[in-house]
Image (tube, rainbow, N blue to C red; front, side):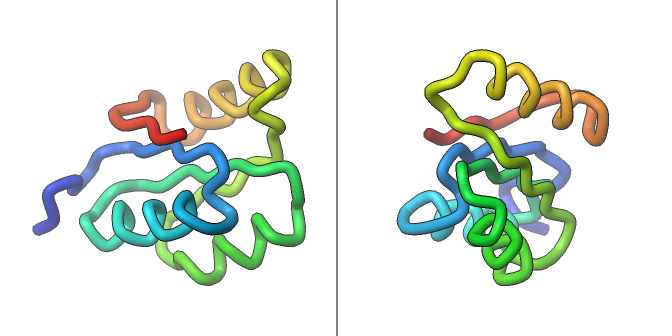
Length: 86
């Protein structure tokens, strides 16, 4: 069992770079991972790369309305957030 087993982690910018690496690690540690980014294509690629129970939501972190939509999607699927990473 991983350190994050059963936790819900939201990672903005999880479609590339450090965010993607973090999402992979959190997933390997047992977390339900939610990634966000501005580009649907790279989000879909990242979700396939991460595998498992990942939710990929297109959202621009500079838009409060899109962040609200991101967390509404998280609430609908998982009901809570345990970990956030920007």
